Length: 76
Image (cartoon, rainbow, N blue to C red; front, top):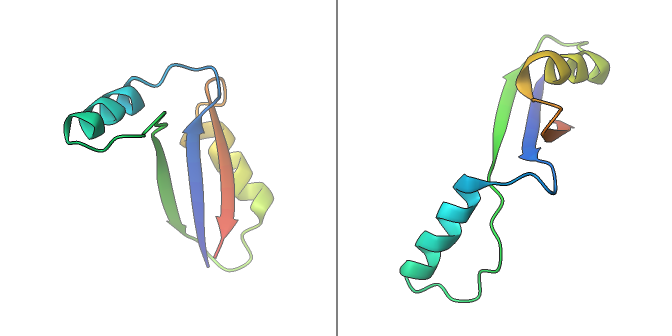
């Protein structure tokens, strides 16, 4: 079983990497980019029967800093 966890900074948290990407895109001539938020995707290969609740625990304890990040679990 596979799961994909999408982790993003919460709204209102400054995203310096996103700002750098936005600036670089403008420098390269890509006009019209109003904002960039950068995150991470974590793919997990899990034993059959692993529950979404268990994956949520993994996120809460290690994969996401829930003070400043939100996450979304996608079971594939």
